Length: 20
Image 1 (cartoon, rainbow, N blue to C red):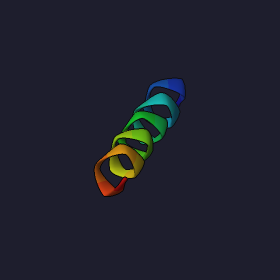
Image 2: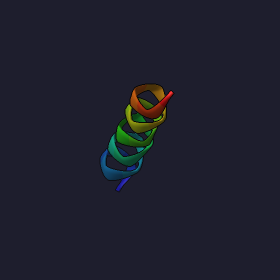
Image 3: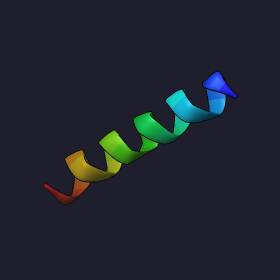
């Protein structure tokens, strides 16, 4: 559960960095 949450947060952060 925690791994999925951290993974989703990381992918979201990378997405924001790419769009910016």
